[in-house]
Image (cartoon, rainbow, N blue to C red):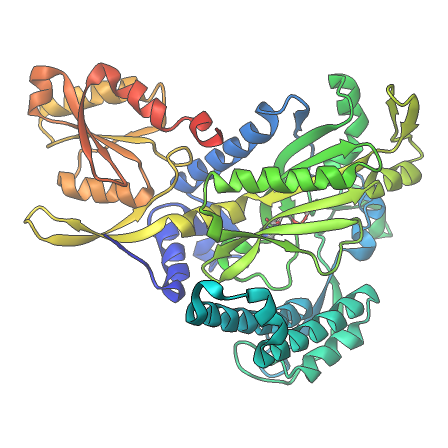
Length: 520
Ligand code: GAP
């Protein structure tokens, strides 16, 4: 029986589990780590690769009109001028003078009015339970005095906030923090500095030539992979003879000097993105925007239950977008952005055309005209997807023990297709005749899937170890195997055991871990 892990505990348990079982380690840990930078261990690297493969298959392999790219991290500095990142890729930061802690002013305000909206939702939920089927939630929201008051208050703060961001008015942001009596979440102090802008791009010097003016050879570590796609748009289109609408997908590292980098791998300074830019005829972008929203949500639903996901329309649009939303996932610390879907208009291609002086136009033979395409983007962080997968998968369960009682097992119920190890091959005990047989099977199966051989400790302990890293199937070789050439396969989730001929093992596992079963 599953014992739900207390939400407050869950996040701590995920972090500890990642370390103990070789999923994630703090970077440079022997030197006390480096803020918001992490290394992926043996099982983490496997899980991460599987997430990337699952995305790549769904985007590139399954769509004739989407092709892949792997562009360089370093790009010409003018790329970031054209994209707007040099001038506008800023976060408003604020320091607390007492605690010396630094926060994003926008996050403090969003969390503040988000909590008031949540209070209104809770009132409506309570009323729905009280009144049963006849309950009209919309009417209740419009008429119940307490709910109306909450909504009015939250909307007022949100409107002020959006205005302040649109006007780039840092003093107005500070005033909202003061007026709403927002305190330092860690210490309760109200002693704030003014709000300042902070550019998130990392820069470094390029080449060995020293220059009087260090700006001459300054380059940036890319803060998004998308620009590599934009500047290669015509190279890819011409070399693959794609016709609009078509997409270019890319997976790669991105770097941001985040002001507040807490919450483990949710907000990192070095992270990985899976991005796809879909090039469309101007005027059709909203249609494609809605289509990509639905397609991406469907992909998430193959891995997570519906109640863990929701859309969130942006209150303030980024400098390049005419429509934007997030797919939010319910992380252990609440609903937060997992993926962004943006209608980026012709902002990027148009600006690159202007600054480079090179045409970024597509000739549309059907219309007999050339134009700068519009772009709809889907952008998801690999690391956030990793955190979502692990925090949803980590469970504690009561299971029967060898003495006829019960024990608690920690299990990662990762979808089989993403599991780091698909199958563990275990001789019942470490006796030569069994280990030789099990090793023989291991060498056969490893040609087909990622598998592991383990003969140390009791069989029960080995099952627990495989449960903890999320291995969906354990195959046991016992003395009967030597007689009948059959093995027992144990299912991680149901604990059911089936006996199968050795010759059928690889096929059986393959059926249960196939990508097509999930993608439908
Ligand atoms: N090209 C568009 C773009 O970069 P974004 O919303 O800034 O848009 C896209 O980022 C996705 O990248 C986010 O939804 C998130 O999953 C991931 N991401 C962004 N910043 C991150 C960070 N500091 N650490 C980990 N993932 C991050």
